[in-house]
Length: 246
Image 1 (tube, rainbow, N blue to C red):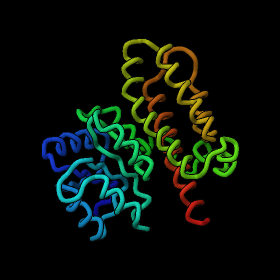
Image 2: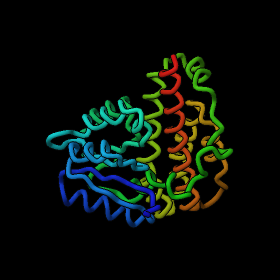
Image 3: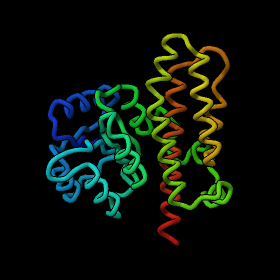
Image 4: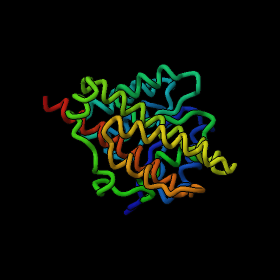
């Protein structure tokens, strides 16, 4: 029996699919599965496949990434699977729409290894596990909504935006640290910390503040970014639970 964490990669472009699968394989011991388009992926999911995370191209024949996202989020058994869109830089507006519909984030072609790794980090023990003390410290979503004067739908959008910012920032911050530009890297980290504080993710905000002064440790920064990304996803799920109970 294969006990490896399952990752599903959905893309009609064989080269893009293989490149992404190679990057995922380089991140750890995953059971990487593939689907040639959205329809193929949905057939596998309907057949019982339960991946820990799903990477899906936005534009495909037969069933697009947006259409597959809608099906996954409407299915009670699949709605909790993190759905990461694969897009081009020109598809920003569509990606923002998908984030509002429940996508966990996105990666942009051509692929960047740190960005892919950030999405996988919560599955790799790079960040505290779900339910750990740091990650569990988040304000009640109702308190956050009241403080910001927004509804649940808007909070989900904001959390999706924060998750996207965190995952996208990984590559930039890693490059800054590699160049020795630790001050610039800390400015990026401070903005993310502010976002976590604003949206009530106290544990993630504290993790940013726990980074020691001086030169940044790339592995520790990666762990903090992974924690923040996971916290945003879990808070989004908590808000959706409130919506479903209303």
